[in-house]
Length: 414
Image (cartoon, rainbow, N blue to C red; front, top):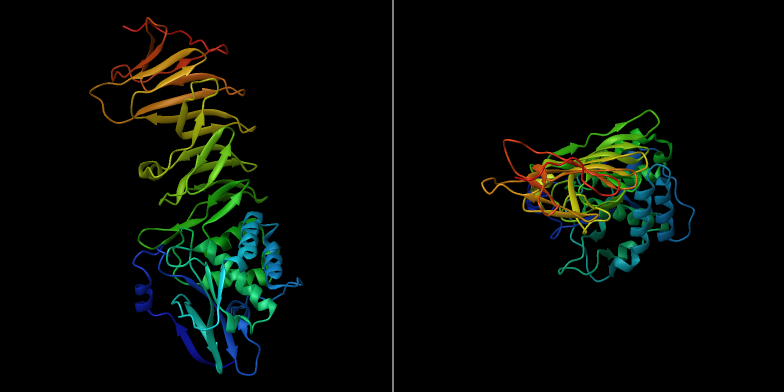
């Protein structure tokens, strides 16, 4: 096949898009199609299945464009069920989130990357997407004149393309071009994902700059773009059976695990912490120092049962195989008081010391507190309260607690 045109987004266009790669407020993404003389129009993603040697397109047998897109997304069910559901929800939402226009064209967005256009063909922008804002209530603006020239299979391909890109523009990938989106759409259409092992699938997602993978309700980081604009793969360890043994948790997500709760939507740091996993369940979690330092979101927390609602915010967590919290280490930076089963435990800070105090909490399988440390040397005062005196000479200590809640073997405070 002869090609008369090579379309490459220029450096000037790239610079004009955004000074900050993740600022999607003033830019969007387009779904493109090729309109060729004497031929039926074809979505660019499907055309590139052949030119990129991705295989053979296998269309959905569903009826409508939306149903076809939902069916195409179901090809991810075995290897990536969470992403399948996400794309299906986006596809089902497409018509309600789209504004179809017939009396104006859509200015092409400079996000194509490298595209080869055959002779006697025109590359037309059919859909423009950006997150709804004060500038636009509709997520998608669709050129109805072009849309109506596409058959249901090509319309479905555009819907799936936009579902994938909807994920990308709300991730720390900072992608400036849609090439990787088109490739993933093509891979799904060619049904390659159904034959991939998990480790190969995850490697492909990293190469496509998709930033997360959900395992057992936990959103694991696959990679992110640094502030300098460079993509960085996150480290994942996977055994021969395809089980993820360790990885990094994505910062922006919500989950609960064995009494621990975590919620964050505003972090600019991509990764919250490093986890080791056993059959998809957390065994250890170490919060990243840069996430804790950012302070945009709270650390993972736990309300101690039978306490005064005392919340532990921990940066180091240990769990048993039954998902029970075994131990939490954290910090406090001010006077703190815990009332547990009728006994008060309090930190008495050093007036001349600034900064944070290390804490530790240990539990049995029934979530009874068995040991506590609040960042000082423990002693019992005259009121029967346990005080942790900040004393650099003696260092930090802990108190063992019986099943009935009584502190064990404490000296009197002086």
